[in-house]
Image: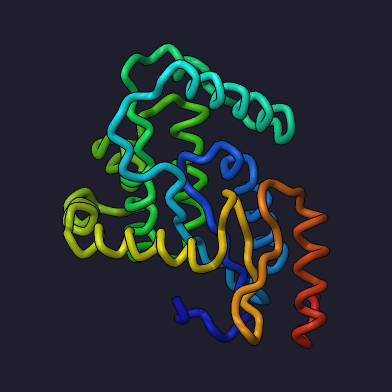
Length: 218
């Protein structure tokens, strides 16, 4: 994880199937655009609900529906609520996380854009991003060839790296998704836990930069 080191580093811990992350990724994208060249944003896949095997129960669907409505009210992001009409849906977030990790290897500069596309495919377009072919189609939009993606996605090494990534998120201390961490001189420092707007994120980031003697973006 230490391949980032010319600019100050912000870790963004997320999951492509996390509703609040869907609302927060536009905030991180705006931050990246405003601070381009002065800040490295490293996307960490945290694993919201990896390796699930059992279909969602009614109570779980109800909790998800409440969460989706709250995200929509707070962020104005579109949602396709037909998702809740599906039967026997297994909410396993590991494949989408592994796909995003593949994208980070293959198109590192486009990681946030591919995350945005995964979010939109699932939440706005009602696509099943636990389905490998759906993931292939999304990656193709970013110039990632099917064969190359599948070779990496289906490899034991990438499965192992995905597990390691989940452990890294835990080591950071990410107990909520989304979370952001500043890479301080003595290790990662929690900046935000859960959703916040751009102003709050920038304020906290500037505070940490001042403590670390980094200049603000011009």
